[in-house]
Image (cartoon, rainbow, N blue to C red):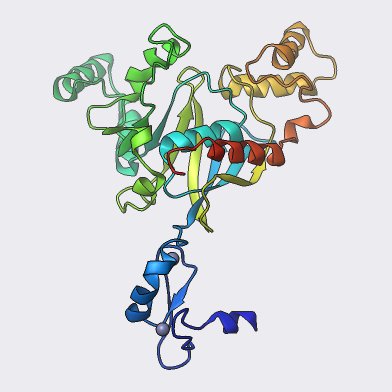
Amino acid sequence: MAEEAMSICAVCNKAADEGKKLSHCARCKDRLYCGKNCQSADWATHKRVCKRQNYLLKIHLCPDDITNPQVFRTLSCPADATFEDFHQALQIAFGWATTHTYDFKIKDPVAEAARAAEAAEEANMTPEQSMLQIMESLRTTGMPATGVPNLLRIVEDDPRGPGGFMGGKGIDFMHNGHRQHPRTPEKKSSKVKLLNVLEKPAYKYKPFEYEYDFGDCWEHAITLEGRKEGTDFFMCVDGEGHYVAEDAASWRGWNKLKSAYRAQRPDKEQMENMRWFERVASNRDPQGLKNGRERVWAKGMINRRLADLAGKALSFT
Ligand SMILES: [Zn+2]
Ligand SMILES: [Zn+2]
């Protein structure tokens, strides 16, 4: 059996059944050793090929609101890629046109639950009581009570983009304030690696989100599904659903556009909507979504573009 043949120490060839259990190289999980001595002896040569395992991340766009088909991609991601690299890979995997800014949020389930409880309480307040609460919150935190702190927020190095405040991302920048919170630490995306979040006990199993475009608010829920062999590039391994139209006016607009394509006799507004997606949208698709194309997505093309991305000497290569 092949598996048995592999169950020997990579250095001294001692087999697993001779009293002691063999252990894997903790980093790549690819090599077996009988103990510390053999591992240390091997490290001088093994370190040249030893690669930290990739993270297998499932990224799901507006999971509650975009269904039939849902839109998700599963990516194998290098552990030492930065969040800026990850953003670029997500733009490719989801067919976005990179005209807006973004952030990543590691959510705080305790703060989220407390906020939900507050909201339930506020629903029963008199206008005077709720005004008092807003004043108190402004006095103590400098923020209205509506904001929920995150464990960490990772932002684009310059959310205004090359165009400055009035450039292409001016609108996004105006909405940036709502995403900040005095208790949420912020870091720049080019300075944080995936492993800085995914290996850190305080963040590791917390809900985790990528938001693109602060006007349309495209929220992507991210879940760690497992580990994969280490690579220098991102790879798309699974997915579902045609990419979504940029500037469609949130998931509501996307759902409207899908209804237009399903209509037996589309009305004037629906005709205009379809024309906009095929000819005007920044990630337009000249073929539209007819004949089941709402389920079509191009895994091969995504992987070719992800390979090109790695070729551009990203910070992790
Ligand atoms: Zn050994
Ligand atoms: Zn190793």
